[in-house]
Length: 298
Ligand code: ASP
Image 1 (cartoon, helix red, strand yellow):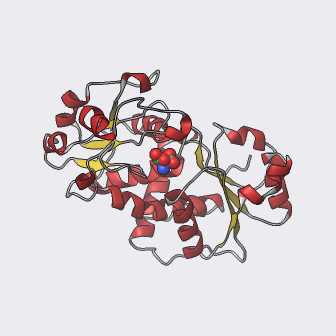
Image 2 (spheres, protein in one colour):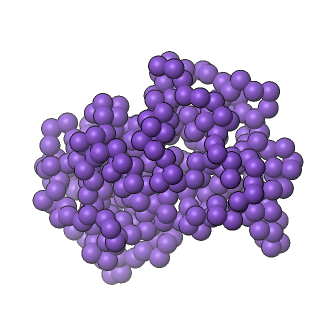
């Protein structure tokens, strides 16, 4: 596997994460118009699962960096004729693509890609990992609080099926944050520290809400959206109990009035659209790294 690939947050050291975050912060500030100093950077985006934010912020980052960005229509590719993911990526490599971004339903799909020479950037793999989402979450926290170490981060919702929960757990613990999880009993995840949502809210610096991952089989059964909101979601009453300076996050897409009261999405505490904005800078930093460029000197 190409060493400049980004597959899982669990592969990154604290130094690697900080280097990417510093580059992303500089992209957002000083180096907004910086472009990759290469003659050709042809990037293929392969999304085997629905995506708006990840997909199109990758496209935005690629184009702003001066790359040639190609969306592969995965439903029209030879995968439907039985070609394997490995053979598909080897084909793109043979046709002179320089990097690929892949989102796939299968956890750790990249294990099939040993032998591929070009960098692979993971845009999300099943319930396993979502490194660029996690990095943009960390960037948002860093902008807000200056440092990740010592932050109290409370993540609530469908923990079991969420790759965002899994990536954030790994990175936040590595960086010294205190991370805990809340939500329905049936979506608890082994090895994750679960707490009572109502008790934990006043202590949290960050309350991150997660969507119910229906595409991975999650269901609330008979429970209506409003019942879910009242029992497990972020209502206005719960948000009012958050401490001064605490922020609301959500990787989106959000379902208004299910996991979060619709009015909170754009409230003063919410950083949800800021997260989306940060997604471009983070993806620029990850692409720059994929092409072998060292972190910017600060
Ligand atoms: N967009 C995030 C993901 O792809 C979160 C979500 O879909 O709920 O995992």
